[in-house]
Image (tube, rainbow over the protein chains, first blue to last red):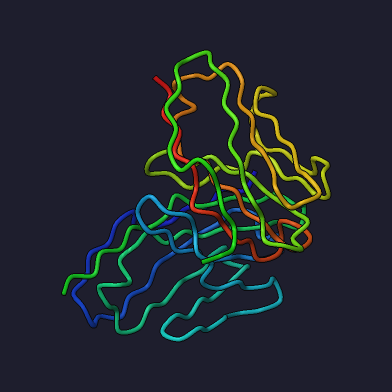
Length: 111
Length: 113
């Protein structure tokens, strides 16, 4: 069974800081990995999708990496802004067609 | 905006009752997935429908059932509600299957008293 862990559960940083969110998984036979953002009480917004054959994806100030051998993915946020405050969720699809979310990291960026 | 809508936004039920939640997928998306998200946790996969047939199920009992219609709408039905069913219910649509980029609706928050 795929287990997905996100550490830390919560993170608070001052505006402008660069930061890294971590996602670890136990089953390396993944099909793809997706990072989502969730604002309080709202649905999920897809940020980046990394296919199994890729090592990283970039969108604006966001960069996601994937290392299947170590069972890790990171989401790097550059020059953080208060509007980045949200919960960030890691989501993994395996080759067997199973999907699992992590419990998320709640980020607070202070002005 | 993802183009995926859900109704109602909030709902209060009592234990033992039945509830139907609705989702309207993006036009052209043949797959809809439903998730349950308890407070402070990640979403848990309930099931997936592809072209009106169930195409995968998570660890949820049979009292959780669904329907998908040809007009890209779908329903999640929960019978014999329990207190632990209180959660945010999310639907997501994708073009062909769950392994593609999924587009989530805003969710329905269900409270069971």
